[in-house]
Each structure stands twice: as structure tokens, then as C-alpha cells.
Length: 209
Ligand code: NHR
Ligand code: GAR
Image 1 (cartoon, protein in one colour):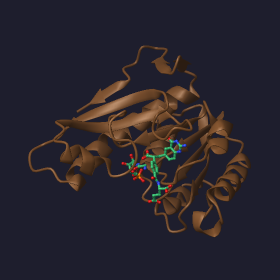
Image 2 (tube, rainbow, N blue to C red):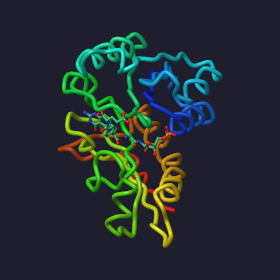
Image 3 (cartoon, protein in one colour):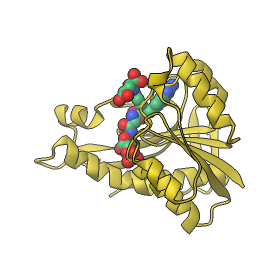
Image 4 (cartoon, protein in one colour):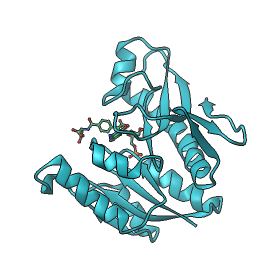
């Protein structure tokens, strides 16, 4: 059984989609813990109600980013994860942290990378007049939102969209794509070669409406 630790900061709907798929599809994996940097994160209650261990590592209780990263890694490693999943996790992680988990840490970012790394992606896509938007699952490296791409989901930008409407359309695709990508990892179906990720069964790494 592969052990998965999921990091959240808020609602946790992607975490919830992964927890449900892991159970419904009987993955050879278990969610060992859900950890939040925000004490009030709504996703913690869902995890606890499903019998999953939860923990909070509050970034505000640490004097520096390095101290936060070190405490977060200490708590994560107490659950001995094979895979670390960022699911709406909102703190930038330093080089020591990313090096420690390199090759076994995934993130979902709400844009079609390499467009719009960082925050406020839906506002930026609307501002640029993009006709498609989406989300990307990638391996996490030291460079923010630049790691090897595992999967992407594209959705149309529709006339009259505001950031909330676009975010909701993207989020529905995130909930299909992220569980699939995590399952590929735990089943050993991903190979990374020269920064590019191959799905070894030739399952589509492109998702769309
Ligand atoms: N860390 C590294 N090194 N590399 C990545 O690819 C990372 C990462 C940490 C988080 C998620 C990412 C996203 O998908 C992620 C990828 C937070 C920020 C941010 O600016 C940017 C990107 C992402 C997550 N955070 C502010 C900060 O100062 C705080 C914002 C807040 O607390 O609301 O850390 O979008
Ligand atoms: C998701 O859309 C995710 O892609 C995005 O935040 C939302 C989290 O929702 N992630 C980021 O913006 C990371 N900086 P959730 O908590 O319900 O999964």
C-alpha cells in the first residue's frame, strides 16, 4: 500500500475527490494524513469525518519560511508518505523542502501552464482574453509552477464569464483529472524523462469538457 499525505489550505474539494476515488476504486493506497497550514481549513473536518489523521502546521506560528518548511516536513515525514499531494495548498515551499520530496510531490495549478504561474490565474486569463483556460497537474520542483506536466484539462472561456464562473468550470475538471493523475502515480504508471511525463498505458493526459 502506498501512503499519501495531502496538503490543503482551505475548502479541500480536490482532496475530497482524491479520498473518494481512492476508496471507490480500491487504489493500492491509503490517505495517511491531511495537513493544513490554516487552522480553520474546511477540508480538515471532511478528512476527520472520514477517519483520516489530520494536522495543522500554522505558517503564522513560525518566524521564517525555512522554519515553517522544516516543521511541515517533520510532521509530513511522521506519516512516512510515498507521495505528497498539494491540493489548494497556498504557501510557496523552499528549495530544501522541494528537494526532499522531488519526484514524489504533485500539485494542481488552476491554469494551462506555462501560462499564468502564481496566483489569480482566472483573473489573468480573462484579462488576456484567453478563449481556453484550465488546470495542470505537475510534479513540484523548486521553480514555482514549472515542474514536469502530468496532465492538463482545458475548458472554454465563455462570454460573460467572471473569475468565479470560470473557476467553477475549471474546478469540475480538476475533480476528474487530479484523482486520475494520483492513481497513475501510486500504480507506478508515470515515467519522467528529460522533464517530460509519459503515461505508460497511453491513457490520455489531456482532459477536456
Ligand atoms: N512551491 C514550489 N517550490 N514549487 C511549486 O511549484 C509550488 C510551491 C508551493 C505551492 C501551489 C501554487 C499553485 O498551484 C504551489 C506550487 C501559492 C502561491 C503563493 O504565492 C503561489 C503558487 C502556488 C501556491 N503563495 C503566497 C506565499 O507568499 C501566499 C498566498 C496566501 O497565503 O494566500 O507563499 O498556484
Ligand atoms: C483549486 O482550484 C486549485 O487548483 C487552486 O485552488 C483551488 C483549491 O480548491 N490551487 C491554487 O490556487 C494553488 N495556489 P480546493 O481547496 O477545493 O481543492
